[in-house]
Amino acid sequence: MNVIVVGSVNMDLVFTGLSALPLPGETISGRDFVVMPGGKGANQASAAATLGATVQFVAAVGTDAFGAQAYDDLATRGVGLDHLKRVDGATGVAAVLIDDSGENSIIIAPGANARVAASDARVIAETMDGAAVVLACLEVPLETVLEWSRIAKQRGWTFILNPAPAQPLPAELLANTTILTPNETELAVLGSVDDLHGAGVDTVIVTRGGDGASLYRQGEPEHSQPAYDVQPVDTTGAGDAFNGALATSIAAGDSIDEALAFAAAVGAIATTALGARAALPTREQVEAFRVG
Image (cartoon, rainbow, N blue to C red; front, side, top):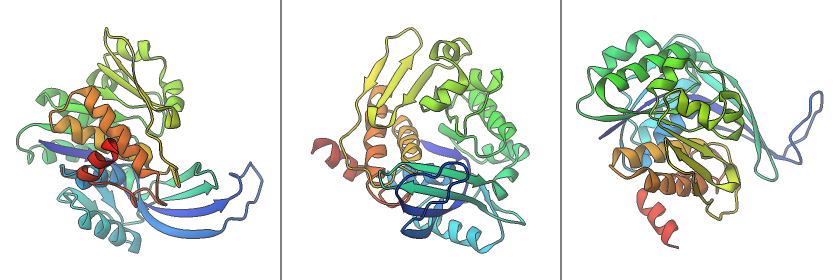
């Protein structure tokens, strides 16, 4: 089964070695600076492809040097790029600040991500054969995400929405969403789990960082997934790895409980190196990690 990722491509400008994240008006010195490929959609697509999924990535990059760099990195990871557009202008960028505990703050300039068009969605979907899992985030236009949710619902595809960056969502989008994956901050913007179930979301997975994740299905008690024990180096992209793994596992036919445990392991492993993609594991590495 295909995994279709609809999302963003950024280049991450990463500042590390901060004693603390800066307060408003404060200047903090760090130790190192590096430029790395990122973007929620690109990270999710990379995670899924590394785990062995057949991935088609719906996205856009600019005609600048960052666009070429981002494209090349995705190609080396086996991400399907037939629907990655090159558009005039700048590629999206993100400034990532990481303190010595591994926590981060991120600032994004969307660039080409703002031009991932809703009008392209049905044309692209017509090229997709068979069943699919669609995974989307909110770093591309909301109307584009909504259109892909409509297509998924009409075709009987699973639609997974990672609602980041957090914002209020249209009722139609929630009604079309099979699995919603907010973190605790995003959940506070969207409302309670009961509210989301009432809006038509079948399954809500709340990610809680070092406290694991909670699974809420309509009419069933909460299921808690403990966090895996790792020493984090950089939490940037851990949620993206989690979502890419979740989509991969669902596409493989796994139960939601198994998909959650698999995704939690991938998200944990992803924190063990600097950068959103440096520690993305293969399926074999995940299986060894879970056994060990």
